[in-house]
Image 1 (tube, helix red, strand yellow):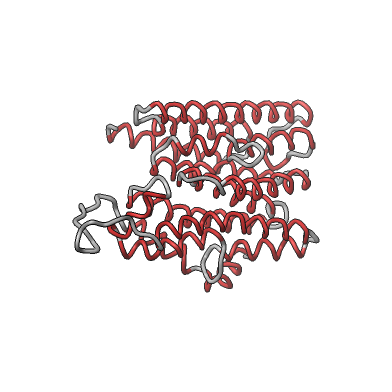
Image 2: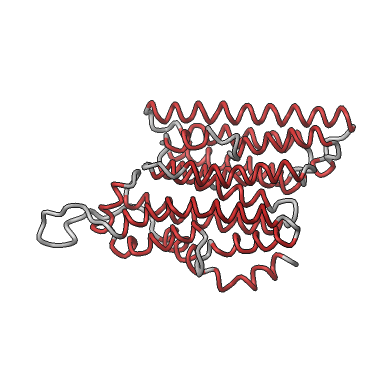
Amino acid sequence: MNPYILTTLLLSLGLGTTLTFMSSHWLLAWMGLEINTLAIIPLMAQHHHPRAIEATTKYFLAQATAAATLMFAAVTNAWMEGQWDISQMSHPLPNAIITIALALKIGLAPLHSWMPEVLQGLNLTTGLLMSTWQKLAPFALLLQMQPANPNLLIFLGLTSTLVGGWGGLNQTQLRKILAYSSIAHLGWMVLVLQFAPSLTFLALITYFIMTAATFLTFKLNNSTNINSLTLSWTKAPALTSMIPLMLLSLGGLPPLTGFMPKWMIILELSKQGFAVTATLAALSALLSLYFYLRITYAAALTMSPNTTTGTTPWRTQSAQMTLPLALTSMMAMCLLPLTPGITAILTL
């Protein structure tokens, strides 16, 4: 892609998200979401492959449906209440409709079916953008409007954690596994949204770090399915030894970074009297842990048949920037000891 066009698209992507962040009016927020969607579509379709075009079309239809529903609910709220302010959504009907529209935008279950298919059709770089950056604007709106129906959020969160765990069990494609992982993590964030928005923000940031580390690792190894990870020992031995730690951090095992948000969310849910919900969410995390362990086994405990005499055969130099990978992988493993400091910052 022409660098000028790429720069324009990336700036538009940033503009759309920033516009949604800064807006307190539903019309401006909707405009930001639309700019965001229209900016990422050329990035998704830049490889003229039928799979990429199909994924782009599915993504566009899902996002357009969500945006139209959101605008319908905002107009309904303006008609019933006489104002467009995001933080003043007092009527339960438009509030619930907008919550469902934003759930479709970010891919929460049971409105998730577009997400694994779309992610499977993209390359790893665009997939990383879709799994991280594209979640920011809808989450900003969810945090700003404070959905009025607690049962709806609990239902969306629990369904997402369970579907994210079950859906990834039988997959062999890494991008689909990461899509189901994303659905499960988003479910954890939505569960605690109404009780502690700061915890939702913390979970979102740690999810971004861990997902970025995983995507960049797979990109360096040029791996798109579990079997191709068996070749990673010969490409990057040091990085391969860190893959299990990154994946177990995504699974939420101590003493890794991923344990921090899950631990604090379970604690908060128990304090609020939702012990059964916390138990179900913790059990659903075991399902996700199973497919992370599958990837770990393929990457770190198996080696492909090797006919050469050396254990590390000739390999080409990678052109990928390794600094982002080094930073995100270290943060994905080592942030748990900073939990007291992070909680102190969040409670300010």
